[in-house]
Length: 69
Image (cartoon, rainbow, N blue to C red; front, side, top):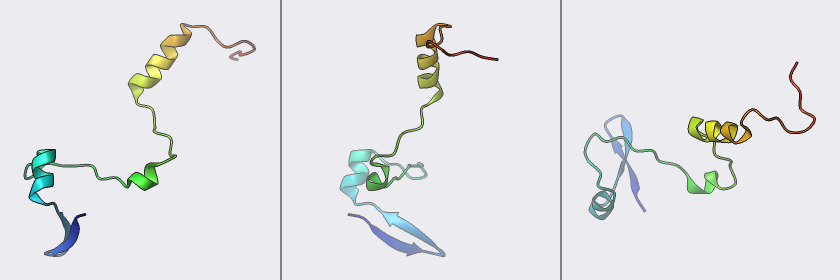
């Protein structure tokens, strides 16, 4: 559990030293914080390498009945 504190006109999250050490956080480093509960059941957007891998699987073949006009 971390605490949100007032820092000047902003809010800040203060991490305990144990968390800083485990995550090897450094001053000025940017981190991405997400709500794990909100992520449950949400489909992850595929990154371009995943999309390319899916397209390579077809090797120019279309599923039966598919046509382009």
